[in-house]
Structures are given as C-alpha cells and as structure tokens.
Image 1 (tube, rainbow over the protein chains, first blue to last red):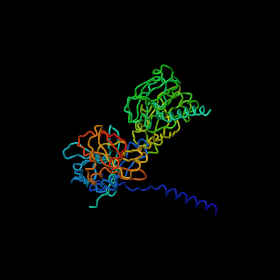
Image 2 (cartoon, rainbow over the protein chains, first blue to last red; image 1 turned 180 degrees about the vertical axis):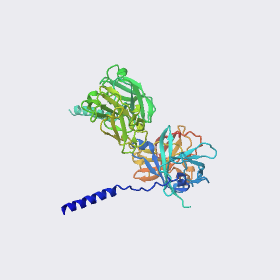
Image 3 (tube, each protein chain N blue to C red; image 1 turned 90 degrees about the vertical axis):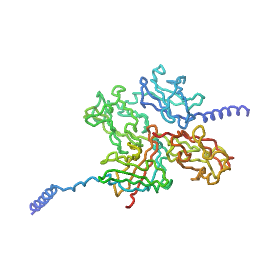
Image 4 (cartoon, chains in turn cyan, yellow; image 1 turned 60 degrees about the vertical axis):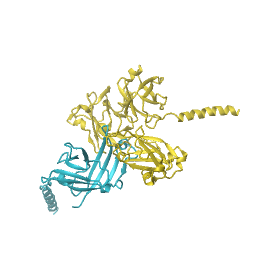
Length: 170
Length: 370
C-alpha cells in the first residue's frame, strides 16, 4: 500500500514537471507608437516651472519657482500640425500675453522622428531651426506633453522652463 | 589698579574684534585633489562669502610652504563667478620639497581672506588601506582623487599589474556606467589610473564632468581592474555631496541666480536685513531702477510727483512673507529694451513712494544668451 502511495506521488510530481516544461506563449509586442501622431494637435499649458539650473548644480537652497498662475501661462498653447503623409508641418503658438521663448509660427520637426528628444522650431524666414524644446517624456496622444525650454549662456545651462501641456479636446 | 586691568581687556577686545572682521574663509581645492609636490597642479580659490566676493580683480594667492612665511605672490585667473585659480608645480614654485602650503587671497587694496592650508599627498596614508579618496567629503562638482593601493587588493591580486583601470558607474541617479570608459572587454584608455607610487594608483575626476551631467550626484560606484577585466577588486561606493551652501542671507536675492534679459526674473528684498533703519519702518516699497553702469532705461526718471499712481504700480514691490518683498518681470520688456541692446547689469535702489527714504544702490549682473 505504501509503495503504491509513493508511486502515485512520484507520478503527480513527474506530471507537474512535464506540464511546467510546456512552452509558454507570450503576447506579441505592438507596433511602436508614432511620436509624430502623438504630438499632433493643440496643447494647452497646465504647469510651468522655472528651474534655476545654476543653483541646482551648486546645491543651492532655491532651485524652482512655479510660474503656472503668473504671466497668463495657463492661456499659452502650441498647435502642431501634421501633413497628409503624417510628417511634421506647421506649428503656431497662442501666447495670450504669456512669454514665449520659442518662435510663434513656422515649421516644426523632431530631431529624430522615431526616437525624438527635441522639438525643433524653424521661423518662416529661416532655413535652420531657430528655437527648440527638449522633450521630458515621449509625446503620446493620451498623455500630458512634457517639454522644457533651456537657456544657455557661455556654454552653460543657466535656466530652464519645464512645461506640462494637456491636449485640447478636438 | 583698575586701569591695569582695563588696558589688557581693551587689547583683548580689539584682538577679537579684528579677528571677527577678517575677510572670511575661502574654499580652496586642487586639481588633482590628492597632489604630489613635483607635479603641476591647479589651485581653485573660491571666494564666495568672503570679503573678496564679487571682486573684479586682480586677485593674488599670497602663500608659503612648510610653515614658512607667506611671501610668495601669484596673480590668479578668473575661472567662474567667484572662483579663481593659479597653476603651479609646488616644489619648483617654492624651491623646496613641499609638504604643506599655507596661503590667503588678496587684492590690490589690501582686502584679504583668512588663511587656508593644503597638504601634499602622503603615501603613508595608504598603508594597510586598499582605497581612500580625497577630500574625504567628496563634492560632485569638484575634483576627487580616488587612490588605489594594489598591494591591498581584496578580491583578485592586482599587485604589480600595470596599468590599472577604474571601472565606474552611478546607480542612485540612474546615470549608469561612465560613458567614456568603453566596454568591460575593451576598456578605454581614459579609464586608466595614474601611477603615483609603488602599487599606488590615482584616478582624479570631477564626478559631474566624468558622467557629463549637471544633475546632483550622491554616489560613485567603482572597482579597480586590469585591462583584460579578468582581475578586479570588489565593488566600492564613494558618497558624494553638494557643494556647501554658501548663500549667506543677503538683503537682495535674485531668482534665478544667472539669467538673461529674456528670462523671467524675480528680485526678492529682505527688509529685515536692510542697513538703513529708516527703511525698516516702511510698509510700501518701490524700486528705482536702471540698466548698465551708465544707469540707462530708468522707467520712471526724475521726481515721481509727475507720475500717475497707475504708472507707479510698475515699481511697487509685493509683500510675500515676514519682511520679504518681491518684484517680478522680464527685463527686456520691463525696461523696453531695443532687441540689440547689450544688457549687462540691473541697478536698484529700494525706496518709499516719496523717495525721501532710500536704500543704497545694488547691482545684479545679466548674462548674454548663447
């Protein structure tokens, strides 16, 4: 009887081991989302933070200042248009009196359409980009768009303005 | 009898008050941080919060070696705001085998800082020790020398191995492996250490530069290894800290510290620290302001009697908390500057509305955008 019980246990363990060795099917990775489609549309500023990069690098006490409710920043918006081939085309800024550190109209592009880290803005009278914003997170339609404008002097980053935008409902 | 007591007491008081009036402690470091007497070094002289803060120069390092007189004078060069430097080979400069350097910083007017001292690296500090770093409190934006004693290797024996490489990474801030050092199997020559003695190796880095980052860093992870990577030490962690906060309480505080004429600029004014007692009684504060040393672009020139109250609003400061007031604007708009106007500084006098009570004039530098 005891031998039979041991055989039964051995059979169960063996069956479990074989079952565990069955190949597991994993779901397939989806198509990578298009960053161009992800940024298309009109985005309204919901938060603007000024960062003192000098103080930050030096471990200073005062490194950030919330500007959201100042200078009419909550009325600041950027519209990114996409052409018929789903490529970057025009952009326009509606500042409503808020400061704009980038051009207000022209052509926009990414520095890399697949893996963008910067949005480049080219003034209509220029052939080279004249201002840019650094992406904090990859642009995606349903997520807030987070970008920062960085000011350099003497080759050093001195101030940045970190924007969070929400997409305007179409 | 009483007079006999009073005179020495007066001398003592004079001595202590002179000491209090001394010019502040500079923060002095070197590159490399752990240096030898026979090699060329750069001495960084940081004069923030000393009497030479914001000095236009020239400034001089007044110094001597091995406890001797400070009778050597060398003009320093500007490196950054309130950071000056001199480059010397200590043994050659002082004409002796240097063990210690004592110095102070001075300008042409006799204003000088308190004295500081530096010590040449002493190899005996590594006796029985595998790794030490200098300074012991390493700052992420300044030189740190990591010294490795191969004779004390803890994992694989690296005694006599030449060259030695430092493999470095940063986990807490997610900066990862230092990019310059190549791959584990093909380590880049820039990761090699300098041989500074028998089985003694030095890697001198500025952490933020080594990782090419402007982020504050809290740690260097590292190990020492041979070229092939088949012999190494165990992992080490070197804590890093921020530079000491030297922001002494001041009457005015600009935010940000460095800015251009296109930036949003906030000027804070702490009435509590104002030296003019008449100002401290004011509850409504205004700024009288202009640009550059020529005092141009004053938005409200002349007597303020001629202006409407609505025009004076632009000069009015907003109370924030306790004794702190602020005013915020974009310089090129506030001063109605022409696009090509070269704005170098802003000048301020804090005053009451009538202008009878005023502070002294303050100036703040404005940088040019790249």
